[in-house]
Image (cartoon, rainbow, N blue to C red; front, side, top):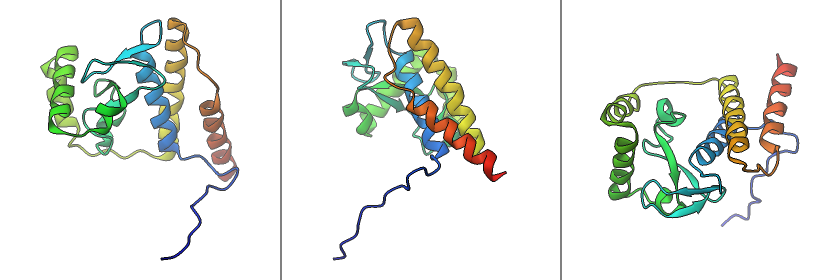
Length: 166
């Protein structure tokens, strides 16, 4: 067995634009679903969780790019339900979406999940910027505090490295 060092990102390396978009979107969904005290209820088991510890659960998985950033496809879940991809949990999530948005949205998401979409790096960054702003606005309305602006800083780093390489 080889002794390999774990892969480490180079200091100052350009952030992954898809990861930036995922983080901003997840942050927005968790804050969107929180009450003014920061508590969310898991969409599949109804357990109360503090928004910061909750997960952004995708009914149609993140591998389906057309629904990855669809707000109707995503709801806050506890970590146990989000990490459990059993048919029972998926059905509960589907039922929650049907209850919240109606059968028409469930049908739309089923179709959308099987279409093809491709995003360029700059498009992911635009998604990240949009959801970072929406998360900040939602947090301010609910009186929730975002701990730091590291996501905003990484978005700015990505944009500055893109300008330099153009």
